[in-house]
Length: 577
Image (tube, rainbow, N blue to C red):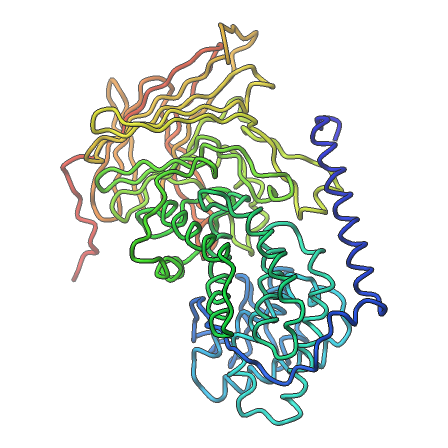
């Protein structure tokens, strides 16, 4: 903790004071003297059933029938009991269980047995969790549960007996009150926004609970303005979280319309900006570029989100506020990280990938970042966040960002956030038919006195990518007392095959899964192939390879490299008998 700057110490104190203030407000509002103001008339019906937009998996019901409950990449064996009696295999599994997002999988089966099970699970929860404590009553978990129960009200309430109907509606009313008094305690960022989305939706959809609609609306609009940046990105710089926010905001607009109310303009504007940004961050493989916490995902799920784009909505041409640059020519898409880390309160999953990039050609990934591991593989998160897990340069085997280790801060933001680089500059332009990015960062200046500058150029037809990486002082000349080792890494997607072709200038021959070939050369640095891990896979970390250019710098170093498509192809089809 001794290396914390004065600015960071003041920020931690500010976050601590803000948390104490929020807790004090929550405690006051939860008191019997004030809690009554959030209690509307006893809810007796659901006025609107919003559309569930998230993709569903009917096979989930088959697993449940066999006593298995798979959530957050973990499986619990129910042994014939209710899932709420099972020992949670992880905290992420427990939160997903109590959030009830899995109801959509049961609804998708359209089987009576699945519907009966869904109703029984909800009644089990009500019976087992009458006391407001623990994970089931974390504000963000309450919010997700409200959204899920209301969105599947038809599944839960149709055909149920009067006693069950009354129990569910009464529980909904109690949970709405609980969330109205505790949402301020939700972690900053998406969890807090989801709480406010749930409150606005509940006020619109549940009878007798619209007295605080205007107040909840105002709080939500304030969070939207704070969290959704001007170019549509999220302040956390994690594009995955933005997709989740859009899936929650879209039904909200429909609910306003169904109740004959005018939805706030800020909600529609935020959705349009976010959708444009998601299109900006989408690679040729159909997935979001793997930066700053982006983990496993589904191309179908992202396509579902983007399917709600207005036909005239164009992808944003610049995401400078969010700190990303897109170079697209022909069949080649290259997206680079040219931003500083997010605020400390939202940087617990941010990664030290300054000036890293990912590249697809057609629908195939070529160069990647290792990505962020899924819920079942969080032991790898520290490795995944390091600069060495990104397609960029590392100096002296250290990261360009540093972890802020402070017990109170880590407890507040659910992990160690990162800090630095403080200055990341970039400029995107054209040189003839080529699109060119010039960028630099100061992540190594305080420790080593050197800037990292990178130039990337994609040819007009997308078949050639040229790069220059430089290490140099911010100004003037510098001669280090000791030469420092550097490594420029190019992580390959696991489906790529690569070999080194010996010669005067060593070359790497890269074969994509569709048989197309690319060649990689470098001028400067010793070229080698090394092992790597790709974390963004639903089955867990996958072994892969990386091309590495290694050398030492005395204070000024330049390395040039070139990647080019070749006219050759290789038959990658499986042999037949």
